[in-house]
Length: 154
Image (tube, rainbow, N blue to C red):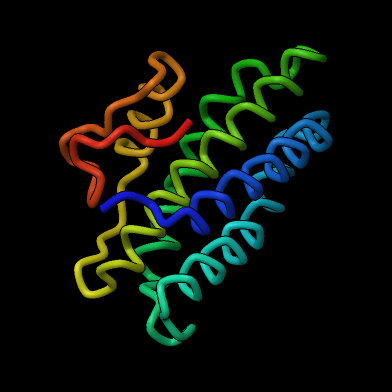
């Protein structure tokens, strides 16, 4: 099922904020990952509210597992350029926005089917980040829940 227009707008706005966070905190390796945790929690609450879920109905365990896997994958990808001024800021901003888009799509699917929500692994999130960086528009990998065959908004 495609993203609701309100959810899509929320994800895109949060991606812009995440990009700013990534760029500003780029001089301190891994600092932005710490700051993005509450940003993703707020994004999750917002999407869940638009899907009609109360906070107790949100599949937090699966979402947090996927979030941590995504942040770990992002950190691993960014560490290779973290000590190159300028390049680190651009890479951090782009990867923060990209991860937010991926997390938003994942959270929307998890909130659409809370009982079926499953955490994605770090390998799956790394694969998704790399695929998204290489090809636009990106097609969701076959293992990507709720979005099989749909183009993830970029």
